[in-house]
Image 1 (cartoon, rainbow, N blue to C red):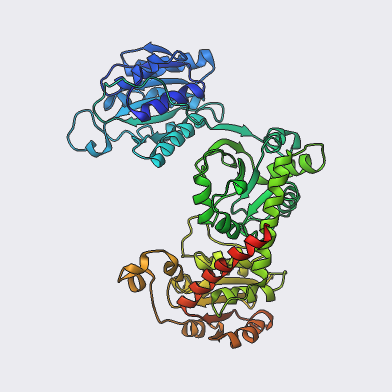
Image 2: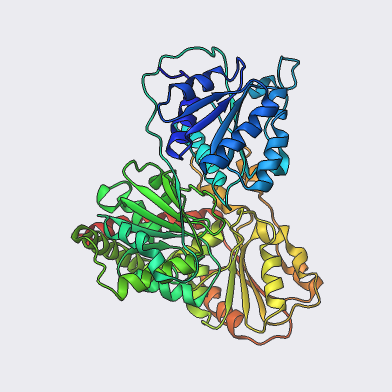
Length: 561
């Protein structure tokens, strides 16, 4: 029988699945449930050592002899600190030492309780990874616990082997052993793809070809023509969903499709290959995190786990460019063949995406920020660079931008968009545009306090006198302070700022003014930056998007018949 503590059982199951076959165990009460579990596992041999100072080196000797990772388990408090010399030695010897420490609940650290000290990060830079496991009370916490253990054990086997530290807080009661079997935990493994070697992608392509509903999802990634070409080639065989934040396909209207199909199983993947960084679409993240019959292989240049959809099973340590170039070669230039069901899935998604794309092109919004971005993207030429700000601006880009767009999507903040675009414009001759909302603009307006800026820099300012995205959050309008305190309502405009910094200024306040002013904005020559401020009403901005998605549903039903 195993411990009643779920974090201990998750840890034990994954130690076995990651190849830990030996554990050095030290005496103590707080770590007794862990030691009990390790001893109950037929796959793990336990070695008792009383002195922790010796136990760490003893475990290192076992690891050197067996060539595999070895756990060393200690109780809470100063017992852990006695492993520091062994951890340091293992770090410089590249030995996969897995330090497992029991701990008191975090609430009792520093409260004069016995055997308590801050245990996470006790080894500083002498471990490749340190994680502190939650005691799961919900599905998300259980996923988090599983992911943390996987991350630590993957790190132990990187770069020839490294020590790692897994800290396990345990609440009382400690000594209930009433669980009949260990859980069948999701194990995350690493697949290395080095250099441009198409044959190294064989396993990836084989997994795609074995799937009934394969899908490629590409998050934000820097532009590269080689990658863009490869993604276009892959998209001719496999459903590729991406936003203009990544190169290749421009606006792919998958968010609109997902708004219509929701969790319809016919449109849900059974295998996802994820590459790049963040995805803007909250709808995709929400839907794909609910899928129970899907696994995700994620391309990760740093080799770390980025489990966006909560179902990752493989880390592909490579660049997206290498992976997709290899995939394109194997899928297009060889006999690799998709299942018939996968071809049906591909055709179903193509029909849906074409329908959504047609709707985006034909839908004419009321006068709004949406209409302004639609007209801008239709008039601005291909020989330019476009930066978008976060929140509403980038979401409109996902509808209308058929080009690669730049956006500070790393942490999605409002700060720095204008400065990033200005810095870009200062070192190139290409026209550089920045499409930005009012809060982001006024927050970062000192970007214009710069004598290096020239006429190649243009700013499309969407001003509805607040953070408009907050008006689309269900339930927030029930708060009496949501407009002034949350959405940042104001009455500012950019004319004075432009005058102060020598920036040309244009403005629009109606649908009739929009077309002629937008044409001037994208075509006139100037030796100084130019700003077009489009004033809209926040209610009409929200209405335009609501009607856009609402009209899509009826069209979609007709398209898929």
